[in-house]
Length: 181
Image 1 (cartoon, one colour):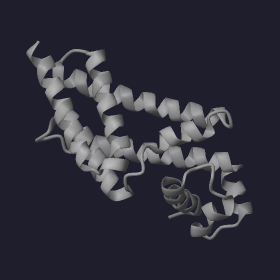
Image 2 (cartoon, helix red, strand yellow):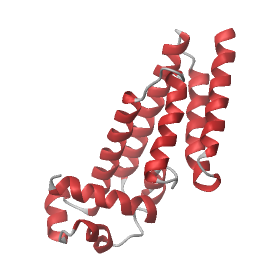
Image 3 (cartoon, rainbow, N blue to C red):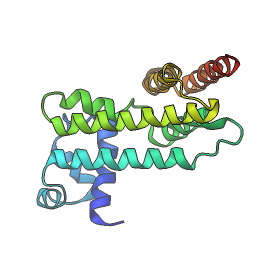
Image 4 (cartoon, rainbow, N blue to C red):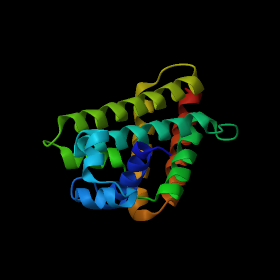
């Protein structure tokens, strides 16, 4: 792993469990063993590191979604199965994108804009999957399934990963109703 990737990986683990803005830069770079100077060389600023972490995390999650096996659960069920495996691997700390959006509110338009862009990309992915299953676009249903996914992500941090299965069942029920219409 190159130094830049190592810094991103170490920072992601800290941001995931301790938040993004409230953690001092020394704490963020300590696990990777780099100096502040090295951090700035690779990312330009602390915000540059946050952006790199969010971009890498989003890319990994979207890749995981595209690799997910949808054989038994279909494209919608696999969304929730991917979420469950992601949470099992990374822990249930809520959505890092939403936390970044909240923590950086007025402090960094670049970070807020990136978080919004990535949420829109995921929402579009949900809509594509709904369209693939139904053979037609259903914007309201797509939004409902997206909300179930986002809610399960947040709820898992307080209620445990089992709520993801409940959200999956609700999404599949909504999909079945839409099929019969």
